[in-house]
Image (cartoon, rainbow, N blue to C red):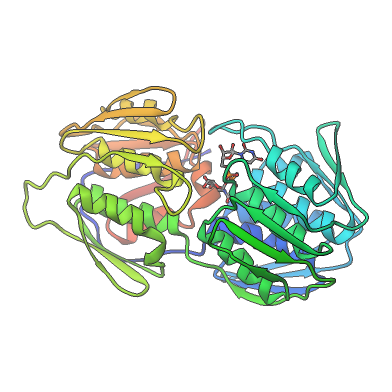
Length: 423
Ligand code: UD1
C-alpha cells in the first residue's frame, strides 16, 4: 500500500490550482441516470471515488469516457437497476443512484452502504424521503428494494440537515408527478451545483441554497454539458497548508464565497489574505516570531464551519498559541486523527464530540496511520510543519478525495514523496 513521506519544515511558495469538487462530481454522475443520451461534465477531478461512481453506472449499462478532466457518460435505456454490495461498499455516495433509478424506471435495488470510519451514517432520511414520494420500500438481504409506478410530489421535512438525503430527493422529485417541497433542505454549494445541472436538463426547481426547495416534476429530462464547481474543501486544505507552514501561497480556481466561515476563523487566528474573484492568497506574516492564535471551532452544516475541514483545522491548532476547543456536531466519530496527531507530539484531550487542543511549540515527525479521507489530509498538513520525517500509511484514503495532492504540494516546494510500503 502506498504511503507518503513528508519532510517537515519547508516553507511553501507559488500558485496552486484547486480541482473540481468531488462532492459535486459524484452526484452529477448519478444525476445522468435521469436522462438517456450523452452527458458531458468538465472540471471533473481524477479521483478514486469518481472511478467508483463510474464503475457503478457502468454496471447499470452506461458507458463512460474520462480524459483531461472531461467525463462523457452515455446513458442507454437502463435495464439493470441493481447497485451491488461490492460497488456500494467502496463509496457510500453510491446510495445516490436510488432516487434517479426509482423515479425514472420505477424500481431500484441498492445495497445498504453500512457504517464507515466517521460514524454510523444511516440512510433513514433518504428512505423516508422516497416513501414520502410514494415509493414502497423494503430492506431485503442487505439491499434497499424500492418500487413505485410513478412517484408523486409531496411536502417533506428533513429531521436533520442531510446533503445526500436532499440530493436523492431532488433527483427523484425532478421526474415525479406534481410539486415536491423539501423543508430543512441542505444548503451546501454542491446542492446548488446539482440543481444547476438538473435545470440544464430541463428540471423545474426553485429555492436551492435556502432551506426550502420546490421541485415541479416534469415528464422527461435531456442530457446537457456542465462544468463542475471548484472543490471548496481542497481549497480550504491548501490554505491551511499555507497557514501551518507560515507561507505565502496563491490558491486559484476557487470560489471565495464558499469559504467565508473558514476565512473568518483563519483571520481570527491572525492570518491575512488577499481575496480576488477566483483566487485567495494567504499572506506571509513578516515577523519571524509569529505564532497564530488558538481559535475555537464548531462544525455545522453550510454556511457554518464544514466538518470536512475539522481535522485539518485541528492540525493547525496543535501549533497555536493557547488552547482551543473543537466541537464536531455533524458526525459522531470524527476524531480518529487525534491519536495520530498525538503521535507527532500534539497535546489533545478528546471526548466524544469535543476535543481540547493545547498548542505546542513544535511537532516531531513519526509514522502515522491515515484513517479516513480528511484525517489523511490533516496528517499531511501536520507533517509539513513537524520537525523531521512523517510517514503517513494507508494513503489510499487521500486518493479518494484529493487530486494529485502530493504533486501540488511538491510544486509549492514541500518535500512530499509517495512510496510503496508493505502495510
Ligand atoms: C456529505 C459529504 C461529506 C460531508 C457531509 C456533511 C458527499 C459525497 N459527502 O456526506 O463529505 O462530510 O455531507 O457535510 O457529498 N444522517 C442521518 N440519516 C440520513 C442521512 C444522514 O441521520 O438518512 C446524518 C449523518 O449520519 C450525519 C448527518 O446526518 O450525522 C449529515 O450527513 P449528510 O449531510 O447526509 O452527509 P453525506 O451526504 O453522507
